[in-house]
Image (tube, rainbow, N blue to C red):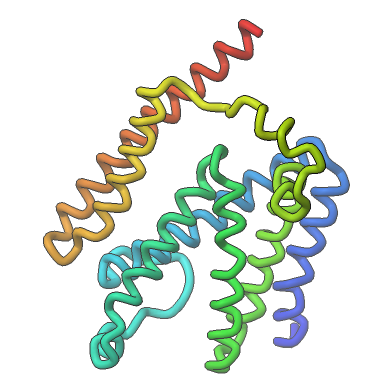
Length: 226
């Protein structure tokens, strides 16, 4: 197989999967959405942790960051910012509640990677990342019923604003945000201690898991009662 065909398949296969899943619906669509969220979320989560841990936590894609080069050009804070942005985007994608927000934030990130690697003449990477962008667009199309309000303001805005928000008990909501905060804060603790970074982030993930289970249980109970 020639490189040209191989690179083309990196884009054509995600396009085919997106079209089939969105057209077929049902469990095909659910499988596509779940798989795309897990894949893209894991890529972002791994990429963010890779940068924030000074390459001690291996990522799933991309070459190592040359920290000597970053230090020489005073770009350490920029790398941390990108790492936190990737970490947050990955977390959002891996939640059902905020997955749409994560998919929206991920579009400019993929475009940035595509044009960066293209301008640096990295072989294959722009095609691979374009395939990820296609999957990302598929997630946006899946959630178009929610996304459309950002693109086209509702004719009856008052009626939309009157709709009740889907939230859980205040303690569970607070617990969820506490867990998210611990994960983000812990990701910045590498300069203090790598082990402290891992322990804080693990604690945050456990809090997030507990809050998520609490909210899911509350939602299931409400559905059963309704």
